[in-house]
Image 1 (cartoon, rainbow, N blue to C red):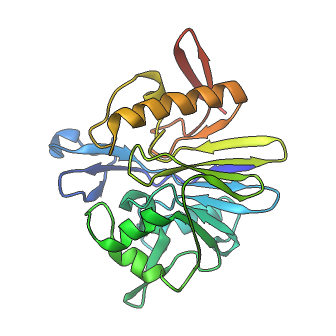
Image 2 (image 1 turned 45 degrees about the vertical axis):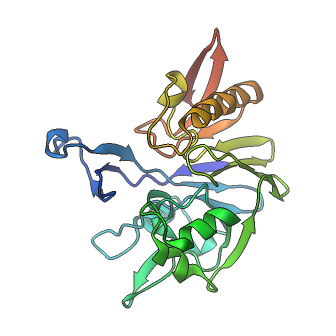
Length: 256
């Protein structure tokens, strides 16, 4: 198994939920009042059978009108059309924007040859347009234009790939477990978005069920430590791929 971090940089997010690029070397947080600062890191996982994309980032483009995530995949040594599976933890915009790309004035799938895997009720939530965290036009553009499997609850998508309905950060959020040739990685999406959230316990206001999300972080961290899972941290500032150890009621995360 090979893991590639497709880092899209840092952003500030205010009450309007607009993501504005933020460069800590040139920008000042004081100029972004009442903002949350996040880092965005989709992941590419190569197994013996698949090239898997875990969440798709914001869908922003570079100066050549190319998706950052497409360029990052090329930088990793692959063509975007080689992605065989796109598995979504949930469909909030900072995770799903890269599912589509604007071409000729319309949105089209960014990975038209890939099989997409999404929780059924999360898909329905995205299409409903009932929350500003979801951009309905993304999912409308995908309908009928991609191979899509809508899963429910927890289960095994195919040998070596498991999903688990978690429901802490969003009601129909899921986490993903991947095993291949003796290697194991865990993608917690926004249930375990950064290593710091293992080290300090807190209830986050941005979670659907903050207490449940906090409990899940600890549960997943303990499993990762006991069973040797490599953890992928979508919102990490620097340590995006790590190994977890747990002793004396404390977690330690080190680079994998």
